Image (cartoon, rainbow, N blue to C red; front, top):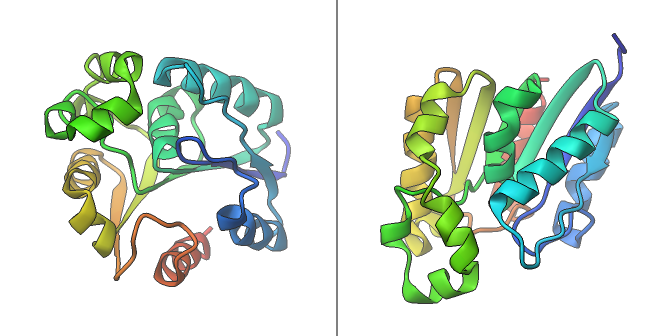
Length: 196
């Protein structure tokens, strides 16, 4: 096995991992000796099943001796759904999207329209509770205080996942909105990443 350490970064819905909000994270990880893979997802007219399949291909191509995955928002859903199959050392679920069958009833009409019928249909087939109960990979789950006020279901999904997953830690980020480069979000992430 290779002694290299690889860190996969999966962005949120309609984002790119090369976006400005992720630059600090890539630089931090490179400085700490990780090979960083910024995962590119083709978001348009596709469902979560296809996003997960795309990520598995990328992971298999670039994995090394020790692998970690960080996903933000929709990217966190991709990381969670693929974790048991890929067996990374740890996953970081940042602002895990409430994109499971337990969450659909809480979605506003605007959000349902934004997400789209095909993605909603896939969500209705996927139980966040079952996925969490069966998660065998160590995980750290983050959500921001401000984003929880704006999107209460994010708080529900993050807390429930952390409670049900066997090897999980929950981090509530002070004052933070849904923004991975918000100062307190960066501080919380840096603190957790220092442990690896």
